[in-house]
Amino acid sequence: MVDFETFLDGGGIIEADDDMPDAYRREVFAFIEMHANSELMGGLTERDWIPKTPGLRHKMAVLAKTQDEIGHGHLLYMIAADLGVKTRTEMLEDLFAGRSRFHNVFHYRAVTWGDQVAIAFLVDAAALISQQAVFKNCSYGPYKRILRRIIAEEGFHMRLGEDRMMRIAEGTDRQRRMFQESLDRWFWPALQLFGPDSAPDDVLLRWHIKSERNEVLRDRWVQRFVPMLQSYGFTIPAPGLRFDEETHRWDVGPIDWEPLRRTLAQGGPDSSRRIREAADNWSRTAWVRAAMDNAAGGPGGCSGAADGAGGADVGLLGEEGEAVESGGAADGAGGADAGDSAAGSACGVGVAVERGGGSPPPGAAS
Ligand SMILES: [Fe+2]
Ligand SMILES: [Fe+2]
Image (cartoon, rainbow, N blue to C red):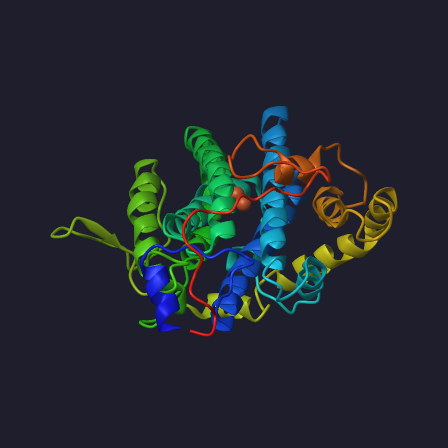
C-alpha cells in the first residue's frame, strides 16, 4: 500500500484493468456509484418538470438537461461496472430497492417553478464545484476522463440556472416572492450537498479522488452565491449569517446536519416517493430493454445498448408512461461533442475510453 500511495502521490493514474488494492477499488466504486445514482435521480427530477415547464424555450432546455443528467448517469454506471464490484443491473436494483445512496438534494420535492430555478442555480453549481475538485487531480483515469464531459455540461446547467434566476429577479413581485420561498427551501440542502467537514484521514483525499476538503468547497460556494443572491435583493435564510470585515468573507453560522443524515438513511421528505417512482418506471419499461436485447441478438449481445436504452426510458417516460420524443440518453451518453475522450460505440451508448498515459501502478499486494 505504501508503494501504491507513493505512486498516486507522484501523479500516477489507475486504469480499470490495473492491479489496485481492494480498499481503493471499493472506495472508488462507492464514490462513482453514488455519483451515478445522483445523476439518474436528478434526471428524474428534471423529467418530472418537462410537462409543467412554462414556455417552449424553457421546455426545450428542461428536455436537454434531462437528457444530459440521464446521460451522465449512464457514463458513470459504465465505469463503475468496469471496477467489477457490481454490475450495472445490480447497481440499479440496489437503487430502486432503497439499498444505495444518492445525493441529499434529490430526497426533496420541487413544488414550484421557482424550485426548479433554485435547483439549476444552486444545486447544479454545488455539483459543478464538487466535480471540478475531483477532476483536478483524480487518480482513477476512467472517472477523470468522464468528468471532463460531465463538467462541460454541468457548466451549461449552472448558466441556465443563473439566467432563469436573473429573469425571476427582474420579474414581478409575485415571481420574486416565489423565488424567495424556493431559496428558503433549497439553500440549506444545496449547501449540505458538500457534506460535513472532511475527516482528517479521509482516504478519498489521500488517494487523490478528491483534491479539496468538503469545507473548502462549501466555503467556495458560500462566498460566490451569498453575495450574488443578496445583490439581486433576496434574503439568505441563515439567521447566523455574517460578514467578517477582517477576512472579507461570509460565514453562514452553525449548520444543522440532521437533515443530511436523514437523507442518507432514505428518510428525507420525498425519499420514498422518489425511490418508488423510479422503481415503478424501471419495471414498466422492462419491455424496452427486452426489445433492445432481442434486436441486438439476445441478452448480452449489445449490453451497452440494452442497459442504456432501458435507463433512458426510466428518464424519459412521462407520468402516465407516454413516450417523450427524444434522442435520449443515447445522445447524452454516446455523443462525442462535449468531450474528447468519449465517442459513441456501435451500440449507441457505449463509450470508447482511451487509456491514460503514465506507467502502470505498483501491484495491489504492495
Ligand atoms: Fe449531471
Ligand atoms: Fe446538472
